[in-house]
Length: 326
Image 1: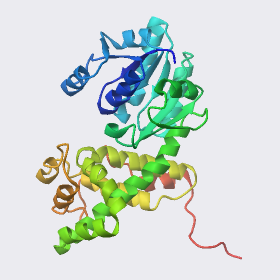
Image 2 (image 1 turned 120 degrees about the vertical axis):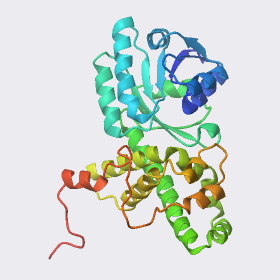
Image 3 (image 1 turned 30 degrees about the vertical axis):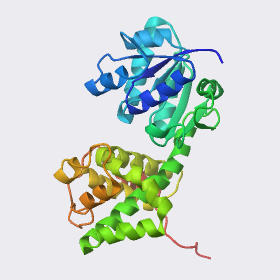
């Protein structure tokens, strides 16, 4: 396999993890720390990446560039890359590795096409700390085989054709299961805590549902740090379901619950759970002190609350339940 120079924008948790796989496969990874946070700078210092002075230099010197950024900034970063492409004249393959909505992936692909830049929709399901063992990278676009070859079998891949947005849509079907199960566990844990039986409930869940609880051990405590993002991702899933002419049910309720959790982001109970290494037991105990299931309204952060139902009603006419009249 030919050694390539591959850009990472930017070396956050996932960007650093993917970059480490590429380095292990013999590639040179380049990035820039221009405008990045102290946490990103410190993370990059521990990786074997070449740090360049600017985004334009990364575009100029790379054969392909991965985007790893908060999903809200994915479109803006693509525009910055387009400006850099126009300035330096290089056209590396652009790989969006963010959890973006399919429509956003299509929009980015269309914008990049105006400068003849190939786009790959790439989305990861799993933990950045266990990319080799447990995570899956979904890819769609005209250059998926090329991207797959650079990883050399370092992690599980699923290639989903040439259509931009296909990988993002498929990831939603998997993420909907994990996020729905997480919301259900949070709801029932709140119910158990209200009855004063949370500890016994957790113990019996481990007895009856060991595989589920093992999965939740690492997944669910992350909601203390990422509840706003998880609510937004659930909203994207619900909207995509609506766009297919279907009605989101459990997904819509999961989004509502996680958005309520996001409203407690600054509560002392949640602040105590934001540290890495928080156990499932500690997270569920903290959850039991909140009012997630109370019927009175809470102030939900704007970033977490974009009602799915309103979008559904605007995209299709409501139909009655039940069989059609004879």
